[in-house]
Length: 213
Image (tube, rainbow, N blue to C red; front, side, top):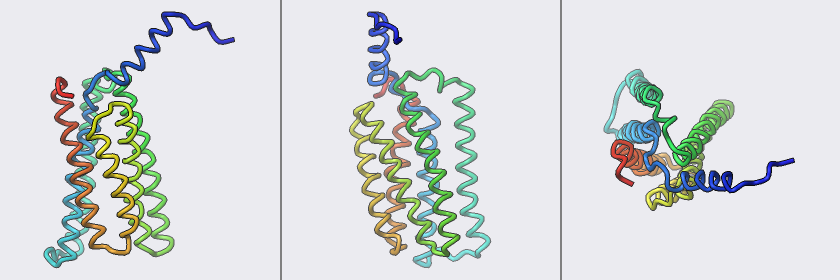
């Protein structure tokens, strides 16, 4: 039989809900750095591929591969450093329920992203169609849009809603443009800088300056 609600438990529930909406406005530093570094690094990679298509970049195949692999390795190194820094400072444990709710939403999205990458990579290799692989980016932006929409529902910040809508539109555009590689890269490049690097920079500033909201 469930326990009878008490005034104290009701107040605790209200405090929990209030902490979600009005709690610590600082985003997790790991999340900020992940978005900032990912947007910048992979945005530069997309610019590199655009340069290849336009004939501005003519590197040997081995150099091209080294550049692409280097981008991913650099991102993983930065991400590992950010996670270890947060762990040492205990930033993830000091966050309020609101911060932890947002962190959980984006962590769940990241886990789903990993599954999506594997699914589309296997499908592209099995069917010998590179366009199948390109669909994964559309799904990634759709999932990010969903995460940002959750963030907006929790915090009601206009830039979060704008990021969510931008991610949704990017997902649709990329899904339509998989057979148009040049325009696909143009949209993807712009989205990485505007919907990943820019929000990442804003979150980074908020994480370093808790008085800002």
